[in-house]
Length: 178
Image (cartoon, rainbow, N blue to C red; front, side, top):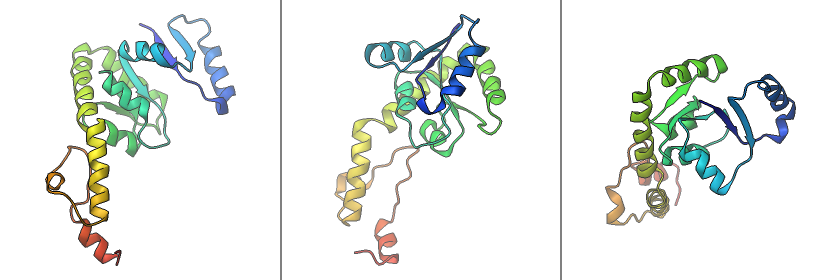
């Protein structure tokens, strides 16, 4: 099995050069740099496990895409990543770093049935929580709530894992927002 590292970080050239030097004699490790289009889809749809190691930012599109590609996903345990994966993936302790990531990856490499199970969970979560319809309905609901006119079709809407303020009118009145 190969470890394919996709992407780049122009602000971390020395770090990446050091990683490439460490992996220079190991043909199992491949650094692709940035990959887009068909190549990206090919890599994404054939991964055994996808790792999102970023410790900054919000919902990472690459993580949601990996889930939609039906990958078993492993993330750095930031609140944003944990919210994105819900119960459909694995996390490692970013403060511990590579040692904890290694623990999670070894567990998954030794349990193909678990990987297969979480592939399906990830895809299902991506489809139910991050579809265009779900996201646009959530934005539409928010805008109507801000205007205090929520249409009936959106009043009972709830998506697992999303936190939508139930009593927005009360929240607005407490802050004297009109």
